[in-house]
Length: 346
Ligand code: GRG
Image (cartoon, rainbow, N blue to C red; front, side, top):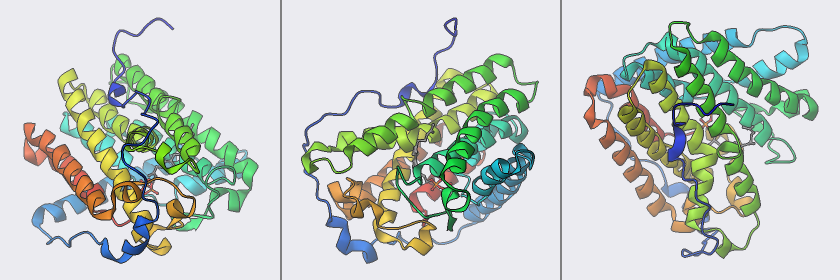
């Protein structure tokens, strides 16, 4: 394809290969004793939190409807049933909310962002379906329900994931309102593709798999940062930047919001690591304690639980500071989402 005249956005994903040797020795198992000590501080309920809850409730209702409409029940029935089973299983919808909130902050509308928001959730969902397969994490529960392959069998789960992935790109191209200039939509498609492929989510998953069972001193904090930035951060980052791009944000804003998203993306995964060793399977809706069981390097295993909590808090604070440039009322949803990610319980 002719080189596109814009730089793809998620350049911010740390691309360099991580250092191979450890400067911080792994302390696997350190998290074992601290499960009970990890509750985030209880926050007083303030008016802004109520507003945020109302904002999220409104957006989530619209997102659920749009997701259901985006993958109708149709022939072949079993395939579409399997796709809908996981897509409509009730995730937190963080990625669509980030996309819509960024679009609105930059002067766009929910309708402008919704097809991309749904596409991001389709991609996220397919990554969960594939991640749960016996050849990957081999998990029986996700979002509080039996995993896709447990209900529909492995062949259908793989194909439902494949279909969601391809449908995501079709959906952005087909359903984004025609009022959005085509070069913006094309840029979003390119950026999402990059964040999902070998330089994004898939790349992060591969390094994660290769790191499992590796010698403790082979998996450095740099390796862990690479895994998190790609496996988890990339999709969160493009959720924010895509929303901004669709609204017609200028490059400076796209870059700033991309940086915000990287910070909350890393915090998201640090919190995920903390929750894996501190929350119960019931609270998580998936099997808890898996990281330690498979000897995975995590933030708590490398730096301890207390330091992990501090790192997550610092990342969220830094992310919110980047939003101080904007009208605080308009930025409230992205500020609230950052806090939510830092304090989430599942
Ligand atoms: C994307 C082509 C392609 C293949 C998939 C299996 C795989 C390659 C990647 C694994 C990606 C993965 C499972 C990353 C973990 C991300 C993560 C922390 C998920 C949990 O996200 P939440 O908490 O979940 O937002 P809900 O259920 O609320 O949506």
